[in-house]
Length: 247
Ligand code: ZN
Image (cartoon, rainbow, N blue to C red; front, side):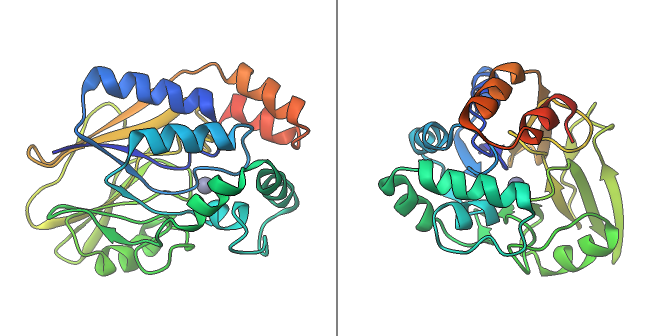
């Protein structure tokens, strides 16, 4: 099985379309979506429509989805995220709000090899930044490969014989990650719609469960177009600026 993996799309239609176009050229059987479809970006309804059309075989919600559909209040959000979340709530059609509210909470076991979560397998809202965070997540995960998002930072951690090691980061995207027997992996492909690793390009991954490998991709997309929409929508300007620098 070849899975297209998308996370943290954040209502960025241009970035999503770039990823979908590129992924089609590589080929995949099914899609996995790891949450935060909306929030921050200017096209929440169009992004929901694209994802619905994609019909992912497994999909979970992110913290921004919960607030944008009204399931949760934006407590813990900074001022910019809160303004964007409230804007998104207003913009979403009632049907799309209901649809987002139905998304399941992670973690979700996809098959014999793959599991998905938004933040971590022990808490959907927890952030996994470093090896210390990764240990608990890797010990909780139920499959050899646990895919996560939430930090908008591409990274891979491996647990072998009780030891955690970082085997992939934003600067080691030159080769695939191999899912070796006897090790467990925690992999964040990076954000589709709001990268934060200093690279403005959209990120996604393709997992091949037969070959037990993950290919990581970064793609240029016309972020100037997204920026113009952010400004026109009256969303905080910083949300446009950060797309150019990937921060
Ligand atoms: Zn996010």
